[in-house]
Image (cartoon, rainbow, N blue to C red; front, side, top):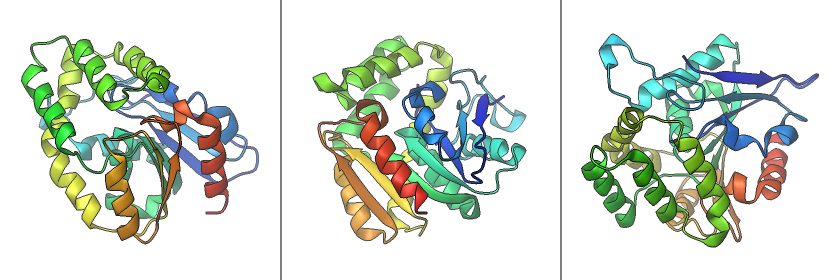
Length: 259
């Protein structure tokens, strides 16, 4: 059910697994692939219902997605490919999935790179989510998604990121968007747990200086969690790998080569 592809390095035994956010697909990493495969084995995957991956249900979870069963999709892929340990690179909601995987299977995670990390919903974010809950079955999902994209990525220099995510979101169906949106019902207690528990796995947060909704929380987490580091990217919003790809690539590759 999960679509993915691998790029095998001639000599390296290290793996890097890229996890995109809600509404995206593995194509959002197009500015990373060429550089990262020079140093590592690379795994790119499409989350269920995104990109080339079909929606995925079992009898027990028909019509319901949870962070746990989406995380298990990722685990199934790395098990199938016999990847014992990997560095994981995520963006936006993908960082929640990576952190959840690290909580449940810490021995499989060598390090976490958290781009545009979501670790708390501030008041504005919570109002946005509640609005989405009210409108999700009434308003065409693409209108709602486009509105969210403008709130999260409001500046002129965020236009490329907005356009990319809206373009990818067009590949979703209304029902699929609603299934993913229902994940918001479990997000607050999960994020509270992540903020509270220092998992002690090397973690690099790469956040845009203009990521107004999420950056303040990450600054506090890095102060509290001993194995975490933060790089703030100037003139950049939420989707750091798209807006500042060269800086993102150089910074992350240097970090991983020494892990």
